[in-house]
Image (tube, rainbow, N blue to C red):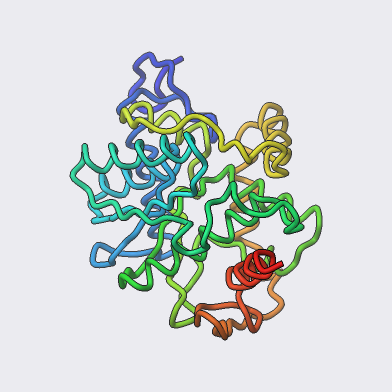
Length: 300
């Protein structure tokens, strides 16, 4: 197999784009794809105060690394969830990454916001713990970004994540979620920070390859609560499709972005939560509703 650009022999390949590349040109290609996403969707510029949500996994650490390599000043935010050894390892990987590169890492604990760690949540909440975790992390990362006056919050969602979410929403015709899915969520409320996904043009395998070439030490274990997650089913579907039609994932996602406005059914109006003041489509945000539920359960 030869590099498509320089012709040197290589064992490296961008599976997402079915493109053999040597190490040097793979890194160059990867960073160009990230730069294209940033510029195409006007995510931020060199003067923006940027915060990346860091879990210790390959996606978030790679997002931090590539933005740094592209010349952006980016701080990291790590939320400790209290999941025993998994949280300890996730924190250690995030801390060592930041220390090695002399970067600022902000660390907060879920317990300080919710009153308990994730494993201590009652079993009768009628919601999967993954859903609660995602909602809580979105609330906390947004709140920290607002309180510390950052302009934009970066997440490590890659192309595979986006096509899996899109497929799931289309299978259930969740029109509100289809309409809202975007690499950029604009600031539509005084307490809602702009959120962006600069890895949206690079696939999961490409992120993994970039992380290893850059010698990023990341958590490889899955969260113990992630077993049975529906998103994994959709990812497996795309693996099968990609074997038969290489490059189908970027074709699917970019095609959606071109016709996205046809799904538009009006912008979602954000209100201020009556309890915490942060944005919600209801009178009380989901995070505060959860806290009320937990307090009621303790009283009973």
